[in-house]
Image (cartoon, rainbow, N blue to C red; front, side):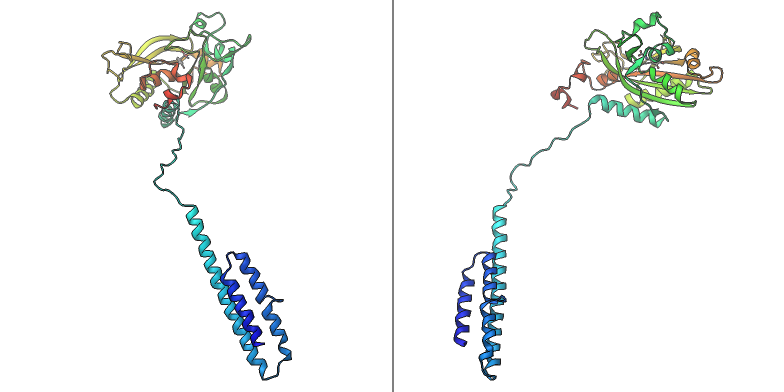
Length: 339
Ligand code: DAH
C-alpha cells in the first residue's frame, strides 16, 4: 500500500508540475483528492490493514493529501500571477499617444448677449415672459393702438398667415398678453423672434430678435424709463457710454423715444461700426399709451407705465463687430467657432 501511495503521489506531483490552466488543476484535484479520487480510494482500503498498520498508513495518506493541497495552492497562485502578467502586457497603455480632444458645444453669440440682458433686467426685478410667434392681428396691432388702415402698419411689413393670423412683427404683442393676465405692479421682459417681409441685406433679415420690456404701476414716470434704460446701457456697454433719448413716434406709447448709445468702438468719433455717426440706435421706448392700458382693462387714471423694445441682433453685431446680420442666421461653423 505504501508503494501504491508513493506512485500516486509521484504521478500527482509530476502531473501538477506540467499543468498550464486552472481547468487542468481542477481536474487533478478531483482525480486525486475528490470523493472518488485516488487518495480517497486508498483510505477506503485501510480496513484490510492490521490495527497497528492502520494509523501509520493513515498518517502517510494524510501527509500526502496535505502535500498535494499545498502544491495545488502554489500552482493556482502561479497561474493567476501569470494570467495577470499576460493581461497587463496585452493592455499596455502608451501614455505618449496624443489624447482624443472632445469638442464641447458653445452658445451662439445671440444667446450670449441675450443671457447678459436677461441677467441685467432680472437684477432690476423684471420677470421673463414668453409669447407666441404666430399672433393674431388683435394682439400684434389692434390692442397696440394700430387699427386696420392705420398708416403705422406700413412701418412693419407683415407676413400674414390668414385674415387675422400673422407672424408677430414685434414682441410688443406680449405687452397686451401680460396686462391681460397680470395685475399691476408689472415688470416683465419678453425676448423672442419677430418677422418682417423686409428686403434682405447686411442690416435686414426677415427674422430677427427683440426684447420687449413693460413696467406698469402707480406713479411710473418718464424718469423711471430713463433710469432703467440708462442703467441697462451702462451695464451692457460700460459705465462711460453716453445715452441719448431722441423724440420719436410709436402708436402704443406717448411720448415716444428712440435711444442711442455712444459707439463703443470709436467712443463717438465715427467709425465703421457706427457708420460714421458716433451713435448706435439700440431701442424704441415710451410711456404706455392710455388707450393701450384701457384696452387691457387697466385704468390709466390710476396706473401708468413705460415700455421698450430692444433689438438683440444690433446689440450682438455691434458687440462682436459683425459686419453682416445674415451671419447670425446662417449657422456656418467657421463663423460660430470664433465665439
Ligand atoms: N415694437 C417696436 C418696433 O418693433 C419697438 C418698440 C418701441 C417697443 C416702443 C416698445 C416701445 O415697447 O414702447 O419697432
